[in-house]
Amino acid sequence: MERINTIILGAAGRDFHNFLVYFKNNPRYNIVAFTAEQIPGIANRNFPRELSGPSYPKGIRIYPESKLPRLIKKRDIEQVVFSYSDLSNSEILRKASLVLANGANFMLLNPEVTMLKSEKPVISIGAVRTGAGKSTVARKVSNFLREKGCNIVIVRHPMPYGELKRQVVQRFETYSDLDRYDCTIEEREEYEPHLDNGFVVFAGVDYEKILVEAEKEGDIILWDGGNNDLPFVKPDFHIVVADPLRPGHEMNYYHGGLNARIADVIIINKVQSADPKAVEIVQTNLKKLNPHATIIKAASKIIVADPSLIEGKRVLVIEDGPTVTHGQMAFGAGTVAAKKFGAKEIVDPKPFVVGFLRDVYERFPHLGKILPSMGYGKEQIKELEETINRIDCDTVLFGNSIDLTRLMKIEKPTLKIKFEFKEISGNLLERELESFVNKYAILLKS
Image (tube, rainbow, N blue to C red; front, side):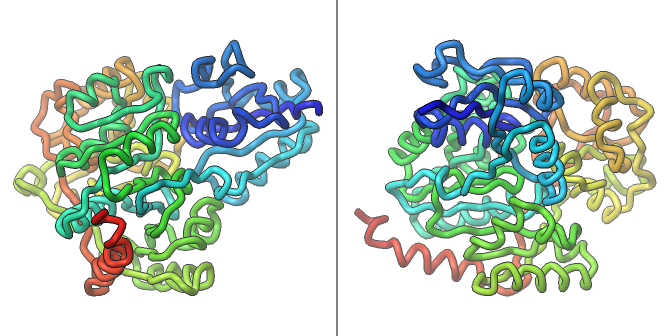
């Protein structure tokens, strides 16, 4: 049987996972290339032969997605597989029409065929959109389960933007592990809060191998999702976070809507910051998508150690990068904190940016008076540092979840906010988690 020449559209994560669990040893397909989008600097490299297997002795080339039409025609591509997250239904159809117009078929994989089966109970946390507030929910869930005597290991959605051969299986327990793997700012923002709470985090490229190692250490696997992607490990209990600051997105974003449809619990987050009408719209939509899910309302409680560094001050706000770029938020938790605690002015960083950040603002014109916390490599981190130090302000306010002074020298007073999950509905989430623990009590004790 002649193999089908195929390209996988990705963003250094879901694409590699789909290849490894579905395409690598599948005799029907010949993977000619990956393409890369969303993340700066992840194209123009190779998926290594050590990971791609004997059918691909030279590895697989990763091209910029902009070269897709040319690749289809030049390489006789018959099929293109969509394999990254957080795009609207209309944007995915736009990509599909581009592929079809150039003579190839367009494929969406059923997520079930890419979900690994764990020997341990699995709780997964996903979202309707990037930046909905998964991190506060993940911390709430892991801390609660630990209080119940469960041994939790966290498996995090991948962000393998460096040398892939070194990132096959990554285990993070201390900050030195982050340094050892040259983690990007985006990775640190996801891993550090879990490490601060005393949990081990696994991530990397090959999730079959990652899951084997994680199962050796934990009674329960907590899948901590990225963007609005679907879990890589089949969940026994699926929690999804929705965002009323972007009402309607639960209906209009492919992965987000799919997450909502398969959820056991859906948390409408940020209700303290949203218009009540927007909360009602989101709740109505979620009930249409999934009438059987338990719907919980919650807030992200903002905690500031020293409000005097904000009150009456000219503040530079640094926000979580993915939330405000492909998550399409003009602002984040840092902006909310600056306004709440009486900042005199939120300084616009745009006139001062250098290097790759100029391209970021051109690509994402919706960005408000915020600086995205981004740095994929030492050069970009240096450009972020230079940008921060060029800006005339009284305080640098970190609205992301890490202290950037560990990675750079900032010549101004800094303040990091914290945000925690606070349920508005009572204690529904804890009751749902209690039921989960009771259901698997025999297995957890064995």
